[in-house]
Amino acid sequence: MAEINAVEVLSKAFPHMNEVALAPLASLTRQREFEKGVLICREGAFEETFYIIGDGEVEFTKRFTADEERQLRTGGPGIYFGEMALVQGEARAANVRALTDVTVLEIDKTAFNEAIQANPAMMLDIMRTLIERMRSNDATALEEMRKQKDQIQDAYARLQSQEQQRTEFLTTMAHELRTPLTAATGYMQLVQAGAMAGPALGMALQKISTNLDRVVSLINDLLFVQEQDLIEPSLRPVSLSALLSIVLDDAEDQARAHGCTIKVNMPSDLPSLQADPDGLVRAFGKLVDNANKFSPEGCSVTIEAVLEVRVLVVDFVDRGVGIAEEFLPRVFQRFAHTDRIGHRVFGGVGLGLAIAKHIIESHGGTIRVYSKEGEGSTFSVSLPLDGGRLQIGTLPTADSSTPPTSASSSDSWNGTGAG
Image (tube, rainbow, N blue to C red):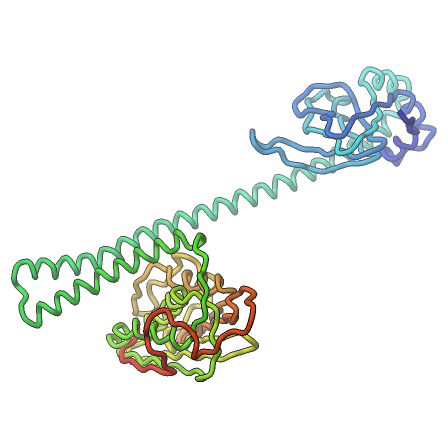
């Protein structure tokens, strides 16, 4: 065991004391070594030994719960611990473990007491340093308590927010399910009672079908959100025009019911992109539904597409009610939705935009929103041609793309209706 210079080590621990004053204290020390990983002091133990590190490094940890032991700090040569064993005989406040092979100087309480009785001046110098150290430790403890208080407050605020969201979600979900089911049940009862005949019967069956489709769509969205992290997109070459053709065919009834016109502006020679067609149809459909929903009757929704350095940029533009500035940061969050803007009331559970964002990002793309309340919104989607994956070879042209279904491709579409 290599000998260390006790006075040099003590001068690091007590820099205000000169070597002459430290010499009597050095004579009280004994040298001891601990191997890496050894627990030198145990939290809660009552001991009567003071330690000064001569060589190596230790860590100080404290157990906050039965399962959590947190590191407070680390220390090297000149750092001391166990001073309260000399002053008050209190239990160890932390665990001290050797991070490397460690050499320490030890001073026992009995020898220390004898030394200060013989040299009171040394006691004053040592106590002055210990008091400064305790003040520093108190400040560190207070800062740790402040951080823990802030963490607890943040956690409590999150819990409150989550509870509020849960309550709002359950209320909204109950309404969104009850409304179409009540309507479908009402028409079904009229049909069963024989009160509907001829064109009225056809209308009733259509209403039943529409409301049940609404329920199925909502349930499918919930299931998708539950499983979306487990779904890996299945990519193949598809043309954007074919995808939008399917989306617009699906949106035709909703658009017509609201007197909306949907226009598509895009070059005819756009290249195909690697994509999961069913996923993008779902994502684009959510964006078209959103544009219709928050636009006034007789509105015009525009879909514009351009190619920018092997990235397709697709903008969904409406001139509707727009999005309040304070709501913009939450617009893509699950279950975040606006119930009312001015005198207009809107339905929905706040899943559409969250689903669209997830699908687009799973293709290596991004989605951004630009909006001003009262002036409409633009949702801008950027999709890399390779679907976010490195593709080998040349991407096929739009003419060789495979659409998700046998829908015809078109560069523009006009429908009557809105939202």
